View 1 (tube, rainbow, N blue to C red):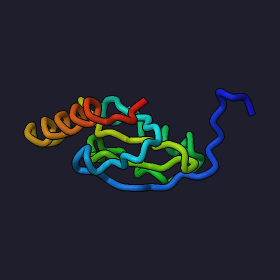
View 2: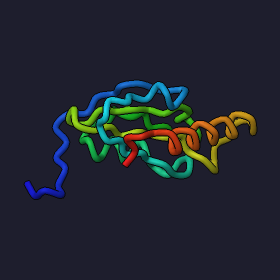
View 3: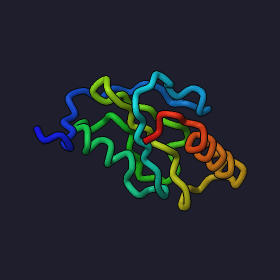
View 4: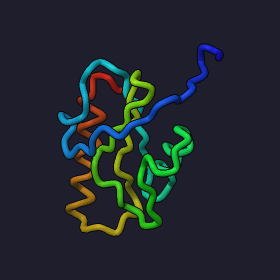
Length: 112
């Protein structure tokens, strides 16, 4: 295995965090998946981990509403962020998602 190659041997759901402070802060690196609603962030997580149902996939935009955290190889975390752009949700809810994403991106010391 080349040094830059990541072979995922284990992937486990950890938490759906409503606040950035709920995301584990144990010094393991975190990789965030951000993008528009319905772009395939959850599908990408499933493909990378080789698990069909690790991250819930929906055909309806805006179903990821919290910070979904997955432990990878007990060595790092993948963090699936709420999408933006196409979600049919009340404006106040979309704004709340925006604040959650911004707070996580600004305050996570382990985000790579």
